[in-house]
Image: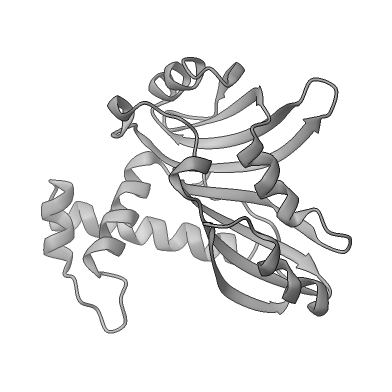
Amino acid sequence: MQSADLTVRLPERMQLPVPSSRDDLDVHREEVLSWRVDPETERVRFLSVFVGDREEIRETARGLAVVHRFETTPIDDDAFYGYAEMDLRAADANLMGAFDEAGVVIVPPMVYTGPGTVRVTVLGEPAVLAGLLERFPEGVGVTVERVSAHRRRSETLAGRLTARQFEAMETARELGYFDVPRTGSLAEVAAELDCSESAASTLLRTVESELVDAALGE
């Protein structure tokens, strides 16, 4: 058995119809932990962990015509569980259908890092995984990030990092702070975050510590 880490990029027609007025919606990350399609009602139910503004995300979700229910339970100031029931759109069915192949298993969580970017780990026999890319709908971009023997534990990061830590991590990555060799400085990260270099350093070191612990299953 092998596992493959995929980055899936959805065209606009397959993304949730969030109003353009919500383009700056404060959601840093969504990790879909479980999901189930009800064939009788043609609705999909799912449980996720979110990092972001709980009230803003809840208001936006409840305002979408395709969403029939959206309930939240706080984890801490920055993270919360979200339970949703929504219509199974044709776009969703087409995307899920790409994984509906005997011998293919999705390893949760599925991670949304933006409205059109999903990171998915799948498990299966090499021959089955090789044919998976051909099953995605037209217009969907797929990048294979890694293929290897599956030995990793499933781990959620949303409950480990605060929204501020996610912001620092995202900013540092965008500025090249994590590049090898490094192309962005700590001073640039601090300026973008509007904090001191000491505070930026503390944020990034905390992020790195949590990521290492997650990778080691601690």
